[in-house]
Image (cartoon, rainbow, N blue to C red; front, side, top):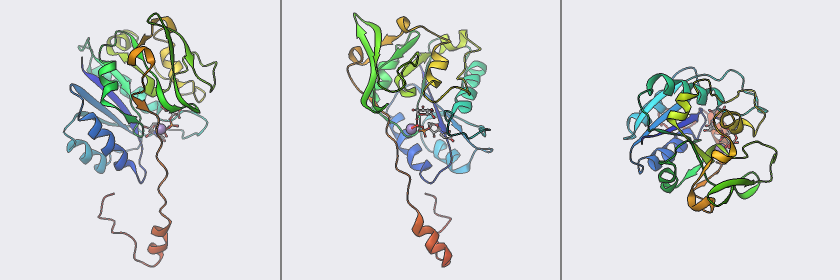
Length: 243
Ligand code: UGA
Ligand code: MN
């Protein structure tokens, strides 16, 4: 099966750093198609160049998210656009697997092999998320029977975006399935999964969800205040140097 990795991304000083790190992880994974959905009105040249030089199979899409509201989840419209792209362009792939990979997390190549045999929805723990060392499904006799979580514990699927993959055929057979753009923070994953499966259908991976192969890392915002200082003196960094 091909793994379709869907990554929403948006312009910021460290965007190329994030995408470089992620793309070079993805290079280590066979049979992978990267769908990069950029949060902007145009497909930016730096992202286009990065993709074309990456050596990956990829699709570069763009969409300017309408309402940047910090109360609402981020990257939702981009992910839904990617789902529509799959509906339109991958109807014939009955074996694919779809994974929503944010651009700032840390991924072991192991997680991609864990998700490859997904029948409906596979799940595994995610490190450094939800205010815990890890969050993850609890497994008994090969079945998910609950979740180790402490944040918004009434979420129907208390699973971070990085903690599940969906088979493409399941998505294609639920053509209306989308992330809910109005979901409260933390309920985004549940808004999609609730349309596709129930908890008992989840397929536990990573040794019955006892291993962590993906981490919800977050990058520190770069401090660029010396840049402002130098610009005032007309000695700012060369804008032709792409960072
Ligand atoms: C957590 C979850 O891990 C995300 O999957 C979820 O979308 C997010 O919360 C949320 O509910 O808002 P977090 O680290 O807080 O993640 O979010 P970011 O990493 O800042 O953003 C998630 C993804 O959306 C990233 O790939 C980011 O590049 C993208 N994004 C973020 C945009 O495309 N546009 C934005 O304005 C912000
Ligand atoms: Mn993040």
